[in-house]
Image 1 (cartoon, rainbow, N blue to C red):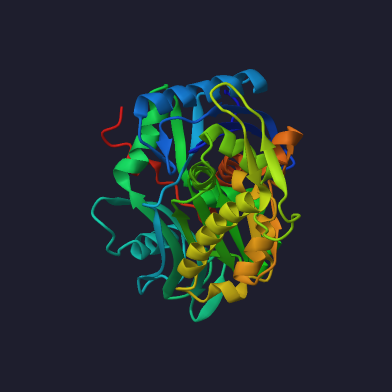
Image 2: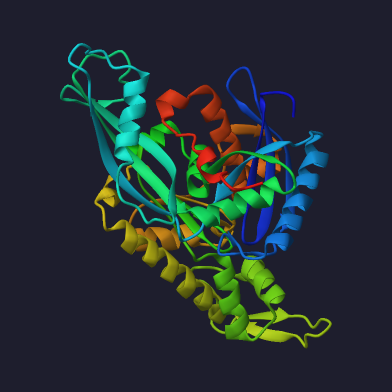
Length: 402
């Protein structure tokens, strides 16, 4: 990876490890060169619980990505998830010296530091400080204050933080391979970079990324991140409910969920049966389709209602002019967009990466939204950092890590 135009995104998910190799083109587009995958083991609810096993899975996915893209991978951008991640909005303020009234880059950096001067749990570390808007001399909604005149600079930030050691575990897993970690990024934020257009962010949009063990979410209003977080519920919980409720093996339950399941009730014929053929160690079984759909419906509804209750702590749900965008592997469940619309009473759409080209199957698969989003995030960091306001904070997590 000698070229500065090559970037790699790594998502260590609960169900799968995904590695995406991308190339930034001279016209500003992003080309996907290859996608590597491996089944995920040693990860639960988006967090590493078996270090050695998870590391082997990451290595498998890396090798797969290198072979498919014909690139030697030396560094990656890594997604982090987990219910330990928290966020809040805060305003920073700095006063310029009396002998100067032109705002410079240091003032912008100082106002970001000021916004972080709040109390967070001692075991936590800041992950992102994302600019919402600047305020200069009573003028609101300023996007770039550098060069403007004023005695006071204020700025609203969306701040994401999480438990330092849990983030470090993800970083260590990669560094032991050994690979360099360019940055760590909240997975939901990465997904939003390729699922949403800037126009949709301006109109107001909620991205819900439902994976195997977690549901990430990011809400935009007026073009800025207003709410974000991660719930420890996902597709694996649905599979587990099917397995226990229908008394079938987990592997059979997962296949049944994907191939036959739906979130919508009342759409099948009364008494309609799904026949599970016998297999080694499994005698076969007849399943009522409506029973299967009821299990799926109830678990998905529970997760979405939990998310909605959390979002209702702030007023932004009423500002979603573009609607809700569902992505992640669980978004492939039949009817999940209709159920989401019913619960939120807001139009919901199924979404995948929009701003890339290359490996078509990967770009159009919502399971890869986060990993592709990491590559897009890397491109933004390299070309557009001042306007977007993503802070580079990786050094905070490296102390004491080999």
